[in-house]
Amino acid sequence: MSVKKFVLILLVFGIVFNVSAGGSRENESASSNQKAVVQAAEFPSKPIEFIVPFAAGGNVDLSARMIAQGLEEVLGEKVVVVNKAGGGATIGQQYAANAKPDGYTIIALTSSFVTNIILKAAPYSIDSLEPIGMFTFDPEIMLVHSGSNLDTIEQLLERAKKEPLMFSTPGHSTSHHIAGIILENMTGAKFEYIHTNGSAEQTVQIAGGHVEIGLSTYGGAASLIDQGKIKVLAIADDERNPIFPDKPTFQEIGLNYNYGAWRGVAVPKGTPQEIKDILEDAFLKAMKSKTVTEGFANSGFPITLKDADGFGKYMLDDYNNIESMKDMLKK
Image (cartoon, rainbow, N blue to C red; front, side, top):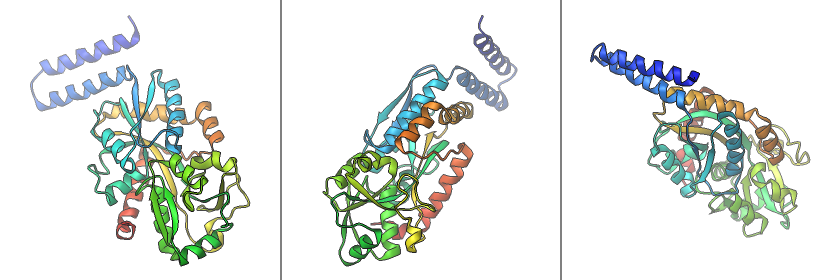
């Protein structure tokens, strides 16, 4: 008899013993807790669905696929990425929030989760999805197409104060859209927003000259930047990026503008703690694996690792910050 089977038999025996000892609520609670332990002992026993609420090919999708591979190596079970794009990520986020809380549905959660709740009155709340871990904070970079006559961030802002510039985003209320609105309010620049269905479409618009500018992350635009189809003008971080060391931070031109996209993994509310613990442990191990660390490095995705508690606190802080300026952001 295998050790796993022996443990399950002992757990089931314990449930039967408690129930037979009396019909009290305490016994029912003990039975429920032991049932969750039994489920955790068997978890995972089938493929896990990893929801990406954006179209395939974008930076969230690419990073999720690397993490899925790392999770498979740790858990020994398939982790299948499923793209559910639309509504600035609300479709995929609602799908995950409504999924059965058994650990077999996880989601790549981004800062759009917070903004969708506050600015779009999304049909879910900050408590509808529970954190497993955070994997990235990616600072915004200002992009223009390679043929643009805008060569510096100062030129861009000066022109945008005189006439609105067409600004591509990966969707309304996404972090890149919010970043643009914040920059408008800080500088007096004006942008005309063109919303797309994801970062892949956004960066193609910029590279093709269909719009004038856009804010994105290096991971989301790396291939087109490397091909020379997109120019970087500035980065919203404390320090210059070693990938393009000749490009200034916004701090260097006198703007206290540090903003970016965070990404993590979450599960539906009500997922048993024992299963969340397994997923958190697997996530942290996967993020430190060669598969993920090398994949992220090659794609230009920074790793900012936080456990479930750290991610939960970070997400709540972001929620409170966005809530405090929601009137400014509703456009």
